[in-house]
Length: 446
Image 1 (cartoon, rainbow, N blue to C red):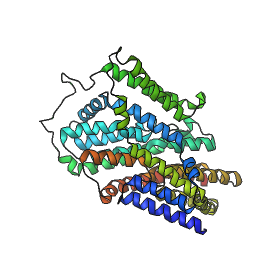
Image 2: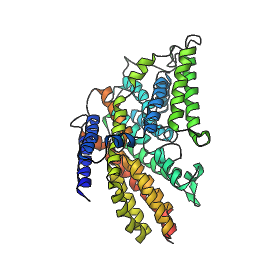
Image 3: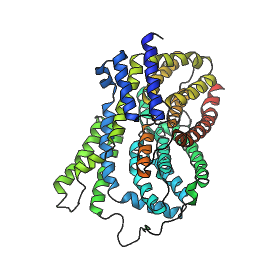
């Protein structure tokens, strides 16, 4: 490693440390890291801009805007009442159910969007039961970041796997004659959610009581969905946008363009037909102001930071370190790949790391007799589950933590955050690793 690479790595590690401990604002820390990388020569200012995936940023802003309108329909509050009714007023059960639901929704919708959609549900129930929202919102963030790799549509890692290997939608359910991503991750997910239900039962959340002064009921004279026409328009445009995104391959356009078109269509309908159809939509300026622009800035800075590592060829150094172990033994290679990937993606935005190693694994499969699929699954599963460790690894957690702290009007300490994230990550990684070895390693060693 030359001097520039060493300096780049130090700048990156210091930046991530500041992001995690939050001595200064996380967005400021991340952007400061980008500026320093440019100053020391890790990359040029033009490269810093180019390393940002603006297609992803466009998706985020567009879908967040649609999700913002969805939050105004009253449907989240209605779902909150329904979920609370199913849980029979048991707040730990309610938080577990709403968190569990978020994971399955995230198989089709970006995990940050899932957090934005379901946070109002928690906020509504919090007002009834007066419990801290941050833990519940953080659980939703952890769950929504879990299942994105279960199917092709949910997150970037499965889409990158499709790009490198050609695997299609059904391959994420059953591949090479055995259960693959959806089944393995679902089994792991159910175990983790069940464990956290018992964690919630032993927390202060279990002792909260209904506040009779603010009690509402879904069957009262003023239902949550006050304007059904507005709700229908928002839901139809949202579903059409997601459907179009799932058909991107056939449409031949970028996902960002589809998401942006959906957002523009929704706004256009409100502008042209809002009065005639008595939709009474919220003001566009107000909706734009409600977007979490700090989180968007955080995403931009993370892409640029990882780009600095890529520009300095540090990611390639890490990838090359894996190759001899992968070639020596499938069990050793899978185990090292899995357990080294998990902590790395806990502090590194994982998409660039995963993409680099996907190409390494492809080359190993082409030049050796080792079947690459156990390695592919080890990488994408560990890369997804391990990213739940910190807000640097999973921006969905940053959004969840920010929203929860704003609602509770207090800042969580690093210890409080890790008390949630570490058990969640450890349990999910251990269970998934056991299933990985049983289903995808031992049969290929016979």
